[in-house]
Image (cartoon, rainbow, N blue to C red):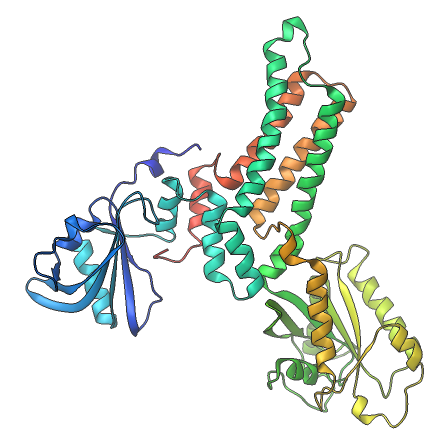
Length: 474
């Protein structure tokens, strides 16, 4: 891995509050660096007489009091984690104190006064990366794990942090390296015109590699929405019960419900977790022609939400809508989205027949609606809402989230894409019988982009961009 001088030269001792800012039962102040134990030893009076923190073994906890100029600050528990068997790979000390804002601030002041520096965002994890405790993709997974709000996003982050994702990348890189080595070897013997790599076999390997890289790139569409929550747009004409349906799904009065058409003039969002997957529901303005400028803006935003959504619930009043009208509306939605499905080519469109509580007989075209797989519900009475929940859960199971390597990081998706393009150029070069040195150049380019994911190749600018998004204290 290439490390810049600025990063490799960081040997000072840092400290930060690692629990959320604010008052609570306890707080944790973390310090890392070669002077961490010695500095905190000078502030600590152990409950056990004769204890010297500087001699304390790694992975031990010690009860005592922190003192500042003979003033007792707090009774604390100090954890010692010695290099290299710590999170950062350096000596790490964690002080568990009471959650008073005054105590937290006083401890940080004491540490900085004695020579420590306040850590920047993600600096503890940055040091873990620089000291070889984590590769770059694992370090990024730490931030994803902290931000995970559902079982799926948590599982993706855990898999990545534990190295399962890295092993996949390393396997790809190994295959690329073998191909590159054979081509590079030919360059060393160019005067003898020797071929160490069978061209047909090389092409087949590149085809397999391109397919695998393509699968990883395409998985980003799913990984990104699982990480942020799968966007579900609730659309339909005004006054068909979209807001009531959102409230029924969420089981709370989140959206304004009114008999007046056009009440919802902008989108309303809320999150619900189904089978460990977060769904981000968006209740949109009703679709109709409107002379009201504000309402028209809301309708335009609705079409934008349709393009961005992965799942669309098209809601209609089953007492006033016939099958042909529903079919035409669904065709119009598909046209509005476009042939490529907007942001999600595999967009799912689910028709929802609402207000079944008002039916006195079967609606016209009922059998056709059933064949269309309409869901018949009453949002007002919260009847059959489980059908929507089950359909959404089934959609997730269909994607087999836990059975594949999923890319959820935009930087990784971009790197895989560039590597795939380079491998494609190798395939084209083999077909066109390009010189060996050009093939070698493209393979090196593919290797470079794979290497940037796990940090085999990196720059200070990339590291600054990645770790600036972390919270301070991690």
